[in-house]
Each structure stands twice: as C-alpha cells, then as structure tokens.
Image 1 (cartoon, rainbow, N blue to C red):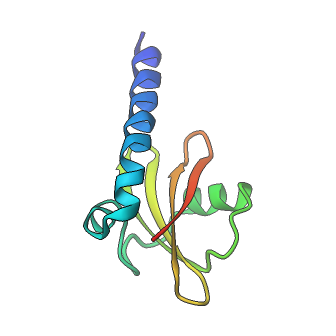
Image 2: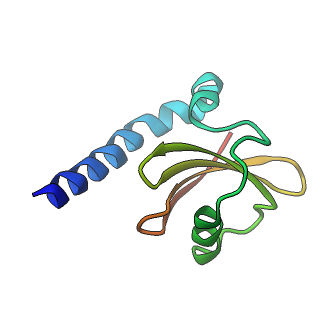
Length: 101
C-alpha cells in the first residue's frame, strides 16, 4: 500500500510539473524559484551518474536544488556560459528536459 502511495505521489508530481513547465519557461521569476543560480548546490554523484547515463552533453558545470525525494532541478552551464535546465530523478535514473530560457 505504501508503494502505491509513493508511486501516485511521483506520478502526481510529474503531472503538476507538466502543467507548470510551459508557464515557467516563459517566466523568469518562476525559473529563479525552481532552478538554482550558478554555484548553488555543490556536487552530487547521483546527479552526475544520471546525467552521464542519459548521455546529457554540454553540462560542464551544474547547480541543483532538491525538489523532492530523489528529484532535483538542475541548471547546467556549457562552456559558452548559457544555462540549460533539467529535472533529474536519481532514484529511477530519469531526466526531463532540456528546457531553455
């Protein structure tokens, strides 16, 4: 029963994000609430492994904010300095995105 509730919570979170993403892609203030600024968050081996396994390229430096259990909002910066945004689920190794400003 607990696994069912956990699954429903994850599905619900993803559904809500799908509803919010078009809005937050247009709104700079919402992006700042969801995604970290450059230099925030430190380093996470789980995020690095997930990005690597999903073959995410051009992410020379990243920052992240924890959004839930095993869910992170990640901002990647390329060498050109332009950010790309992802939602990373480290528990089941999924990545949503990229989302651009």
